[in-house]
Image (tube, rainbow, N blue to C red; front, side, top):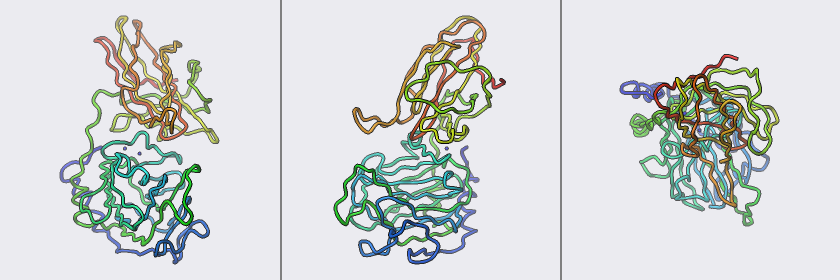
Length: 385
């Protein structure tokens, strides 16, 4: 689910939480403080556990910003998801990690996923620093440890001293919040009698405390280099409820534009900046740039988007495309990246208004663009009405 601390500052960021350590707190599931579905806190596979096919177990009473969260996890390998939510400012503003037990050993067994407005952004966060493969043991308890300090985090699994996943830049600003455990099983998954997809046991939190070897991992984490040449500043308008399919009409006059910025990784994370209309199942917004050309010219636009985009030059529709997630027929992950389409922009001499209608309904709402134009063309984000 997104600039870079350097040199001595890295060491200060990592070491500061250790000085504020408050000691370990064991959080047994038979003690007060847990909020969980009825019957989900029970004996399972020989341990007192949070065990259910679907649901959350919240601890809102323990605000954590930096430190360690650890627990034992048991998964069966059925199609399911096992989550740790952390730094929960509210039910809709948090970050999370999750396991895909049914994809063990694949490149996305582990997933980092920030949430804005209650919407996960996993299609935007993938590859090094966000996803990782893991040979996750099945039908046995395995110890999991998550450490976080400032904008960095690392996940350790089992006895391996090497982290299974390092997140060199967490997407959200570091703020204290509660945490939760979650299991989710898709409705079409059939489980054998007495078998659950995931269960958690032996939860311990260590506010402000990070073991020395984990602190060293965080200090050594290197944020991936940003993509060169991508657009960094944009104008965005308020969102509107959208219908399925591409937006085919140009934007109306009189939109209230405001300036927004891309993430260090290069994409404009719209869910961070634009409020989703209440109750909308699919939503969209307009994003704008102004291109000034000394003479008629053609510019090259390399585009990435999630889930759908329509590109207008003035009132002319140049392109519309859909790249959202599909489970099958055909399967499509819907991951954001440049190269989802390349468009030629036929610029007239003078001012050219470039408008993007960006739609989403699941997994991440974003736009990414790299403009290559001949000399004499300037690109600006002019956000006045």
